[in-house]
Length: 110
Length: 112
Image (tube, rainbow over all chains, first blue to last red; front, side):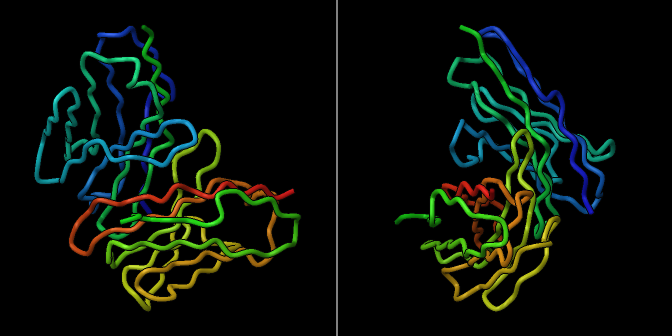
């Protein structure tokens, strides 16, 4: 089955700095790559996603890049704010089963 | 429009007890999923149902059974609970043809 690895496990940045989280996947059949934000005690919330026919997608301060050849994708958050502090998960799917990374705890220091 | 709902919110079981976690969605979605989330880990797929009447195993199905009761409801049963099943369980649903999943609020289960 698919194997999704996510790095780093924790990330601490100063408010206003950028944050980058990276994921790799193993199954070339995977064709959709969502990113979720999860606050403590809450459900995961989709923040951005990308399909395999697209290399980059941006939504305000958040962007995702995908390199299909290398099988890796990354989340970029610019101008970080304290409310960005949470756990972020990447995932990969071939449309049926979703496989998640182990998460990155982002701490944005004011 | 409640989205995806789960009951109960919290549950404590003794080893060997059984219970059923309930999930319902009011978005007329075809696909439904059950995940578990252990501390410091991502979500792992237990079972999923691509459509009413079908169910398939995910990554970690051992110790669980599921029932897709109708299009709205997808239940997860633990026949004989074990401490290793202590986790937070999330249900999710997805519209056919679309990728985005919608998650329920979760059930926090502790097995002692």
